[in-house]
Image 1 (cartoon, rainbow, N blue to C red):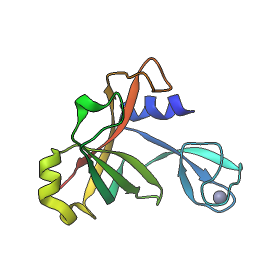
Image 2 (tube, protein in one colour):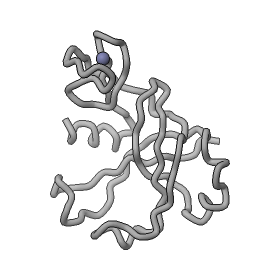
Image 3 (cartoon, rainbow, N blue to C red):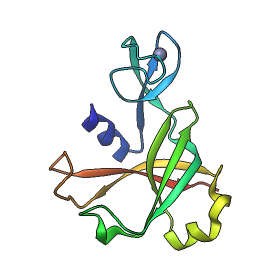
Length: 134
Ligand SMILES: [Zn+2]
């Protein structure tokens, strides 16, 4: 399921589930985030969202050092679920924009990064990316 999500992400699609019990949406998994129900169906979510918060990482976890600094953002999809990924802008620019970034619309896509030793999928590492739309 993990793999399916990231494969679709590389094609610019965000897979999720719709709960048949409470009608809320979650990022692809087997149970509803909202009520825990397993009575869910797979759906394609919007690939657009809004930045709710972000943080710039200057000191990366082991294996990510070369990618620093990068900007990690929380994005709320149109369906109301959240996704964590990286903002596709320069860390310096993100710092300059500061709070202005909050509420900005982004498009979601997947990007393949070089592998590192701690990643569960040894073949490849796909990271959700957010590109500013406006
Ligand atoms: Zn539910």
